[in-house]
Image 1 (cartoon, rainbow, N blue to C red):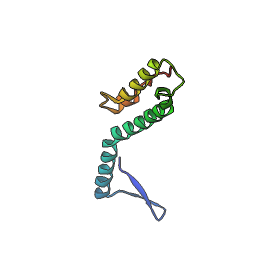
Image 2: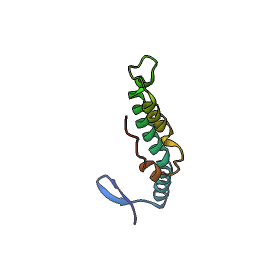
Image 3: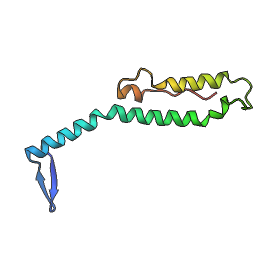
Length: 97
């Protein structure tokens, strides 16, 4: 299917060079999908870690920190072994204690 763009309000088909350039742009975008998905995952993970930093500090009012330590370890390990965008999209975050 030929792509088109508007030039002075008129729909004009892409030239062969424009098609090739657009194909290259799309390939580069698709190649970066995993990196973008991982960046989003890390951002969410880091936000969740920051929200519960206080739970493991020495002066925290929580006496038994084991559940929180486990939760935080699971959050830190959440990116391990992910190799595809589908893997990243299938990640299930642990539940806060």
